[in-house]
Length: 391
Image (tube, rainbow, N blue to C red; front, side, top):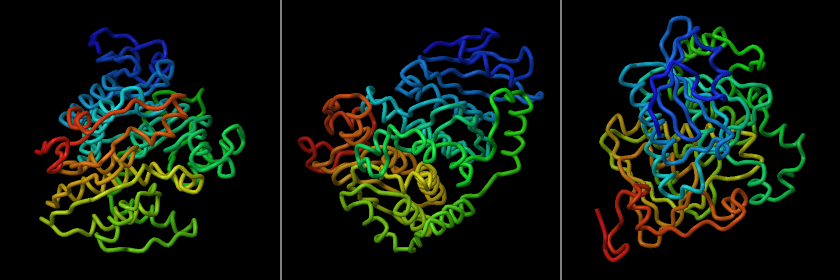
């Protein structure tokens, strides 16, 4: 990770975004392998522009990238500086293992704080935006995209592997485009503005920032909009008790949009100063065509936001991993709570093992609960775990 005060584009990749800033205002603040932060002005307004570089590990976010972005988010909140995320990324870097997952957790907590502080957050999606990157995009109050962009919680190959080719043939470009493409995402309401590449300019960025200022949607309004999306898909989500909603996350099964919405709903109804133990056992989020049609990453980001809202009003939330935990759902359940605990039999992964094999072409390295505690994926081991270690 390096710092710079040069008035120059962050990289050759970043140079294309300089046209979106006032002439001569772009200044590289910091950079890591796959991420750069540029400070500049748009129509005279100071902002920070975060750029991912797909030529480096697919634009994925490793430990350095997540830490760098976290620092930027904290600074934007302190100075109330608008943030623009120019995303072309596969999400969290799987080769970073649990250390990368812990860094992403810390970063996402800072992103939640920035969103709740009401500072304008804008996403501009150029090409691919999957996994954790899609969670960042869906946390933003406004999202713009180029027509070629694809957005999803799980990539096509992962859905084919976990749900079967009958659900999605990853080699069928038309089917993939129909599921993840910008037209489908815009129809669902997950993309606000679609820009042609040649139209990228200071006017483009100013339009996104103006919309962000006008569209400060509160969490309850967003919650009802996501409920309506479920209804339009033929799903009528019940309003279970908090215990009933938590049970949906401890069945040892992947959780989808409907289950995620129900837990968010129950958490929003929790009483002030209540202590809530979110006991969970699930292999990750559902990797299915049905859930991706609903824009699953928006539900995942919304759950994290609802947990943060509940925490801010005095609900003490604790996530307790009883069996398995992995993926973006782990980040949502870990970033907005007071702490994460784990029972002796718990297993925490960046993604389900079969999903990691799809991406990396090999089985993931084994990491233990001690690794999870050391890196900060878990804050406390329950009595008896790893020789009795506890917080």
